[in-house]
Figure: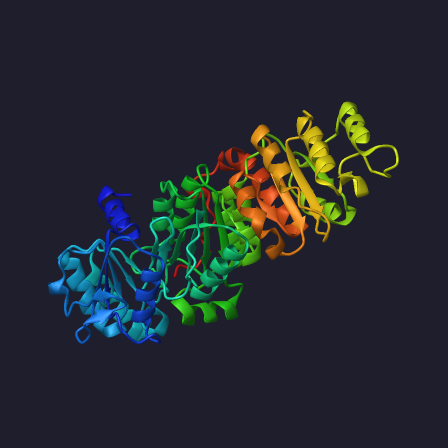
Length: 477
């Protein structure tokens, strides 16, 4: 990436000043909603609403026209109709604005006339990067920046998500909030005027706040560039891709949505996997994997121990984990099994082998801790999946697992079966200790499997080259 573009993207995604063009004083207008997001997010920089008829909006002085602004803003949010936005983009470019977010639709997704208008917009923007058009906007949680007109909760974290669909993007953000998964950057790419997926992935590859990159795509104008950039990124950071559009009918739907033809799924999946991306089939799966990859530790091997006091969830978890090539259940040492038997006592009908089912003897936090400790001390174990079931009289062994995570470098994934609300008081501290925490065994196992898959990246990348990406049948969009 050229340094000048990187500097402009830095200005845009971490601005010190924002102009909101078309900011309104009516709550049901997009311009007002964006101003409200900026204020609610407690953005610390300068905010300049621009509107010819208003004096003040949400406590900020309103400027009648761009020429009245006291400085050239790092970021401009254009909340005008598609026709007015073209002229504004040219004026912002001439001013030297870092970049812009353009909300309005009515461009390439609307057919021939829209394509013509988008071409004019692209010419007007020149080298000024634009997120959109036809976008909900973007947010940078650590910068307290929210220039979308929907999400209110920022919740900083280490996952950055790019979405071609506003609805899918909002679904991801909402689910991430529910799961205690913090966001670094969330970008609604819209029609991708001059910021394609590959450009944004390249930018996020070097972003210190981003550990995991997720994206939802319906298509791209340059599939080869996307695969090449993913291949360059995955040795450093995992890239997860949720691809929409499964056939000819889906192609028709996606063209009318964001001006993108979806392409043929099998070719896409093959190319993405060859490039090192992890494909997912739902927002739910995306969240489960992102959580583990952003919070958890990468194991040194694929020998897994499962510890539970209820057998069913461990069976379900192993059904998921066994699909990972090379993943095996650890053969626990005789000394480990003897220690576990000593902790539980002779009266507990326990399955000592792996999965270790402590039954009633593992309900209390002290024996749960001691058994988990014995398992982690075993040299045959590379990672531990700890499963505990909710009960009105039982306390989740959160403190015990946190203590073990501080002592042992091996990955620990926790599944506290119950409700999200029940684990919320403990979840943040568990995540801070490097323990991804779930409420369903399938999700926990998917997360642990994602950590195991990171062991494969070097092998998967060897022998791959840009010339081998099977992209001949992928439709550009």
